[in-house]
Length: 423
Image (cartoon, rainbow, N blue to C red; front, side, top):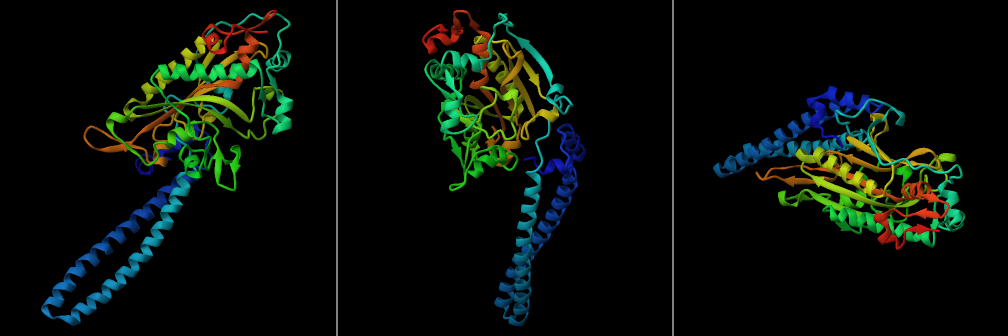
């Protein structure tokens, strides 16, 4: 949630940022400024009346001590009227503050100055690329055929058990999933992240805190009887660990990593681009989260990007890093880098990670603050990244490493998988 002072101090900056994100309801900006002005004027009236009541109460005591009961009674009537008015103001102020809050949460985060202008993924900016493009024979197969050939996954069985988009891994396919999860976690832990095992469902406050509500309620699975939501990523419970917490200077940066299954409804996703593991409703992912001092957050972001890049390099996959344009960014992000790996059989790039800086947008919703060396408190910056999401990594590992004698496992993964080939 954007801080209210930015609307008073730099309305044009807000409008420019919303335009870069292609947000259409810009009339909300003037409404928020007007509502805030009403709130401030009413707060002044409330405070003045409260001060009058306090002053009059002291005078009443003095008048009673002097024996001037008549004037004291007149002042008591005036105080009673003021108190009644204060009650009305408190109720009205509460309604205005709720109206202001409801409008503020409809606005997305403002993009960083480096975010490119654009509306579609085609307008994202390629920052750099790496790895070697595989040279496959003309008989290359997509991962869904390889999965069937080597009995690694059964989509039809998942459809029977649950529904479309819920794959069942088995045999060496299940082993590959487990190997990747363990390898990713160990890679993150070695870089200074502390491992967590969070709940896979969260309450409404947690979903609101990281910006899934009210923006993405249609994309989450809702357990209506209890009001819980299945998590779309472990970013949600991990970041909410610090909700309503004031961190001491020694406690930041906080670095967290976790594995979790992720659940996304992906409504409206159909066609050839979502075949196999390209887009599923349940998938496994390892996440990294950092809670940092605002002064360091963009250096931290670059460090997280470098971390994910090293992880992809260790898997020997061709990749590229994109800086997302304003129209392709998430509601909550100020700057996002996407990682894509090249699928040699499908001959296209597949997204496997997003690394984002949310600045104070999430922290303002969750009231996550830190106390500096001078004892002053301020909102932290929150960042997160996929390190990594498994489905498309598996798809590219299978497709890019296929050969006549089976599928080669990258050297870094072999100790976790317990072998060098799938055959």
